[in-house]
Image (tube, rainbow, N blue to C red; front, top):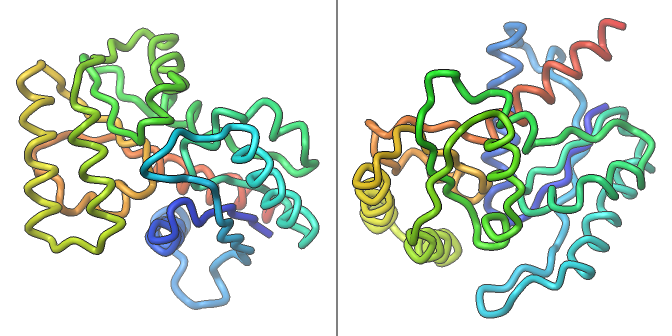
Length: 228
């Protein structure tokens, strides 16, 4: 059984599960209900606030509780549908017995060799942790570090206020313009809330989505477990 820790933010859970279902169809042609994997989902309330910094001790403890809950249900494979949570990956993977997938490493490994200058689009705590910048730089990629975080913060705020599609598209457009102006040829989306609204992003903006990388690996690893 697959265990997915989600709920960070709450609106990102359903779109992520949909990604996993799509991967089942893509990877092994799942069609009838019985052909899809059993998935236990924990939508974990987490201490993220718009008006204050992350308390890392409290956040890590909340994530650990969610993973332990999933482990108790009998999950054979664990994944966290939250990029910021991967700041604590080394300690979290030691806290549970089932294998825990590493979304950051999976995303770095999925980067096409032809990608040149990358732009990271993520929540502020993820950017400030530099987990993605480090993983991408280790594989030889140049990650532009400039001042578009304010626009990303605004876009994330819109996702929490149930903004209309026109507002979301305009916010994405501004980010896309900044990326192009700085010579970015590939955007790395490392935030589940942003993955959920990526349909509003400019169509000509090449994107590697960390959520898609994780969803793909969940299904690949589940198939290995199923067939072993």
